[in-house]
Length: 249
Figure 1 (tube, rainbow, N blue to C red):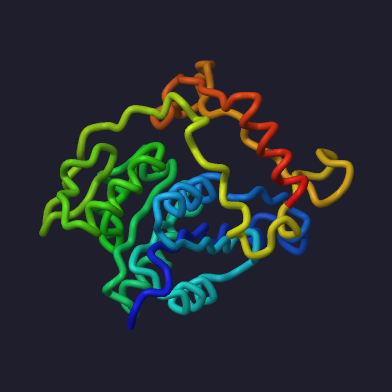
Figure 2 (figure 1 turned 90 degrees about the vertical axis):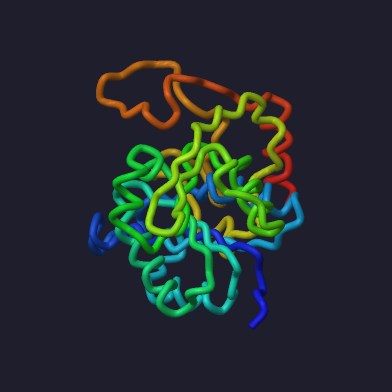
């Protein structure tokens, strides 16, 4: 069966019901900016892609599996925080059972902070992207497409037979303006499924935007192992252009 998409990105269920009980639909929902940026750059490089946002669309694991299998991608990219890593692992495990041909990648802050432990605990992931993924994901897809070596790609941990191979750390992007706009158009219920926290907007539709990455401060309670203590901002022109696009389209 031929793949309908090259890669599908998944934001796993985060169990609002567990956190908010009967008020689950009153919780705030932000677009998965990381996946939108990744989808934007893979599309710019000629790969077909889709996003499944289980968090915003209130999808359980089985519904995520069904939607993914319908799209039949060659590659899967799943993001996970520490709170969501078990949900991501459940999705990956079930996909491996039903579609073992799919190459499943993990990304996000949890695996970036604990790469070896995470990959050892969850063998259903074939590869993990560590840190920022925009440049890395293109190199991984190109390597798989043209039979290149994954070991030559910085910023990943992958499996080679029974061993884990972790490559050199990838430097953080310095010019964020080189990135295409996030692919908000690939979110199935955008913008209606998204809204900032109560009291942070005057009317809907409304979303929060990310205008920078990292943080210059050194709070002792913050884990800075992923983004270190760097701070990089998009330019004013980039953000204004993004706002105009959202407003018009």
